[in-house]
Image (cartoon, rainbow, N blue to C red; front, side, top):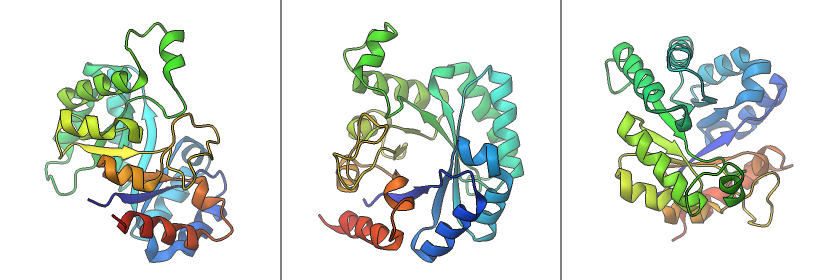
Length: 237
């Protein structure tokens, strides 16, 4: 299986979002709007992506009391035509299950229902995080697997995780359970603010359904060339 590419639009200026989306054209059909873009230019950006018939991953990483998250998730899905919405699994089973039930009650058809995706462990964190917070797991991979299992049982459609956990999560939660992998780099040595990074080919081998790529494309002087290189890498065995 070849993962689908999602380009992260981490901007606070609409003209930059419009420029990269227009530049990539039909080459990319899926984009991620995260906190920075949503807070600063969310409405304008989302409406433009919808107008361009692009698929949208609204990556808000919602984490609050169940009622607040449920209402925020429903509001986002009713206001914008999004395909994926993220919440933190560490918000708890009640938060996840109540949110999923509310979504199911509004979107009765499976075909147009946005997917609710859980955040396991941010790729900016490593084993040190477990020690600092006295979380009793051997390593970050084991903890991510534990969170994914909680999310699956609470009704999530999939999770965001590092490539390092992707294959194990697929085995535990089933092939239909979606796995989205950020922290993707063409060069493993280019960490930026990430602790755990992998290449597109690594993600493909691990069984990822989607890969999220940001700066490698959006900060490139030749984004089309970079995306084509990623597509070629994914096609290779």
